[in-house]
Length: 312
Image (cartoon, rainbow, N blue to C red; front, side, top):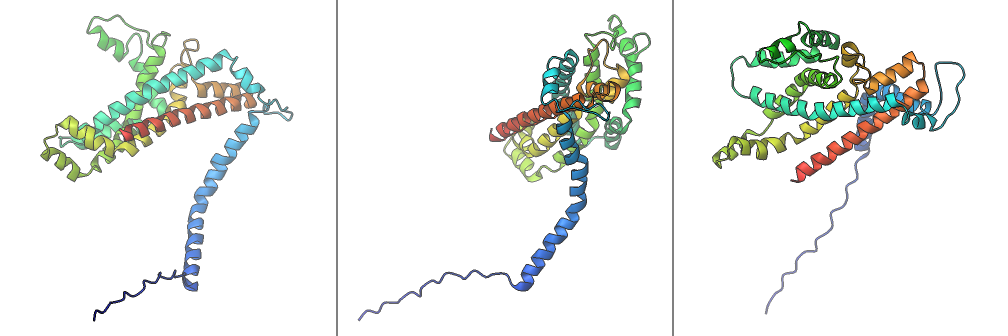
């Protein structure tokens, strides 16, 4: 006689609902979370959301700091794209960003890789690279005005050693904007170097040692281990660089005031003149909206490039 062992039926585990005390604890944690977030949310609402809404509304009016104003719809935007000064300033700003951002990021990463090595005087070099970032832009511009001085400046003095003729760096339409780009790259290195250095020090040592054991060269180790590991930091540096370059103003204002002619006139300078000198706040608000859209386009392109790089 054979006996059959019957398996006990598997019962579906009952969903245990949180107790009353557990629900009370969760609700108290949610309230605590909102309470802690409240100052930041209030700050964002007052200093970001409200100004953005105000700019969007004002860009559709002819408001000029007076008691009377009229609704003009998209008239300001139509006028902008017929405004030679606006188009020139937009082009100069975009060109400034296209040149300064990739070059400054590449140099900063190279410097950070060098500072991540065991070298003498490491603290000195880190401090030296970071000092321009915390120095007032007016002071930085004053130093570079002396460097670019046609008669006694360091730039012409250095080039004269190699037989080059003196150049009117900031007064020459061909070299004025590139000269400002050099200053922008130099001034922005410090922050990027520190961020990259922190990211490099966070790369897994185990992965680096595994690559060494596999016989990878320095370049292969950087391309296949270090570069993917610092991908999120790269995107963060890109975003902050885009916003910073599009907001360039004080450097240009002190060094060239948009000259010679309008060869170094940038977007924020044009907004400043229309808003606070010509008192055309509605028109300046429309320029600001255009600038925000261009920044958003740059960020979107950067995001696509990051995704493509991550997929590779």
